[in-house]
Image (cartoon, rainbow, N blue to C red; front, side, top):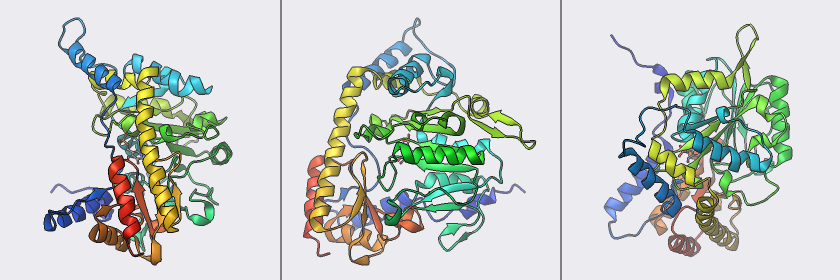
Length: 409
Ligand code: PLP
């Protein structure tokens, strides 16, 4: 009798965004005439930049000619793309990353979920609360969690992020092995300073831990003092891996391309305490489980790392940041406190009137037909909070803010 991986049965309910989508769809079916504005899921709405479209088209036409046709190639990604990333994202910031430390992937979700495979089943993991749910669920599937009790999994170390600590996790008081950090943060919209990241790197060095640094939203950082990469911090290459994505940088949520940086110095240890290179382990894993990102996609992705393509992408990001400003100003006018909204596409607001996150969700959906994401879906500390995203169309964002202002709060 074939048996299932019972760890899957520990997973809680349906995935947060499926539940939001389901409730929204049910409402829409019952009220087909109502115009619902979606500021819930972090999905982009603006089309790809023209340079990217040109790159994709070139990639497709290359596939149709014998001289330029591409079959299986190196699964870590084409050199033309890795070199462009190396120059624009790292060399330009004074960070030395080698080509074979860059792995092109189909997105940061996959890699942030898969990276934990490199580590032992009984390592201690530290996860912020609230958190991007993929970090938690992938570790549950891998069997690292205990039971789900009172809103949390046993065995995981949760790092509370609340108003009191500026929605940024504090360093754990105990030693942990794998730390999940995400800046600019989903869902709280917070960024980390160099000083804060330095403390994390020191902690990881001291405890022989590894930091999984999710920088999926780094392109939204406009403050020149805020680091875009954890590798801007001395010593980080020994203790961190970084995950990046073109989903929000360049609107690739449906096109799919990201990249993961695993420095050769980054190490974990075998049972005898002997150091093992994470870069070598990840390379081995990818060789077995991944066959690379489609050539035309990599041709399109390359354009994001040209001056022209990046300028076009930045114009789109500015559009979303302007949406974030509009939402933030609206909330300020209503006296609703929030975090994020600058250097980030996310606005993390305190629900007015002490409503629970799902009560506020229902109030917005049923009352004014605006969809956001209940903070409690991101963790226990998210109860009483609500996430709005700035990825909508500007005219809809303006209308949503007007509708929120009309609510009796
Ligand atoms: N990491 C974070 C924090 C995210 O919010 C998201 C998507 O919303 C991802 C990763 C996934 O990115 P990708 O589309 O590259 O898989």
